[in-house]
Length: 156
Image 1 (cartoon, helix red, strand yellow):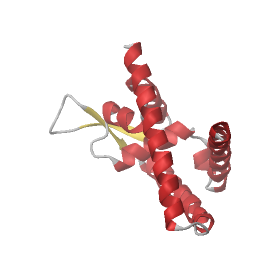
Image 2 (cartoon, rainbow, N blue to C red):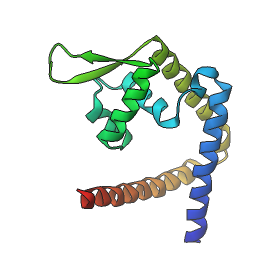
Image 3 (cartoon, one colour):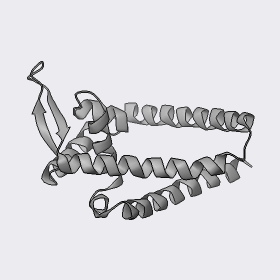
Image 4 (cartoon, rainbow, N blue to C red):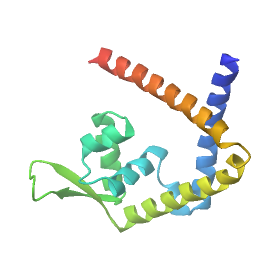
């Protein structure tokens, strides 16, 4: 049964990625120009206060080097711009441009649509079933996060 669960989780991941690609197409040409990670980087910049490389890397659970590369691409695509916070001149923050805001809004709408479609599926389960499922998935996510942290720590 454990292997069935893991296989189902891998399939779930694969299907959600495929759906994400199709939803991207459904929500306009502008999203087609951005990778999954770029959209989520834009999402972070749109949501967190004074977003910088460190905060974005922590939020997306990526390295600062990876975020720096994504940031350069987003600047080239004119989705974000560099902003010097007057309260902390050493720090480089980022803000969304008009294009970046459009990507942010469409990405948000895409997720809202996805969640709305999922509501009808989850309505067939009792609250208790959902609580148990959440508890298991949450514990598994934490275990995977701990494994990831251990690997990152061993690479330092």
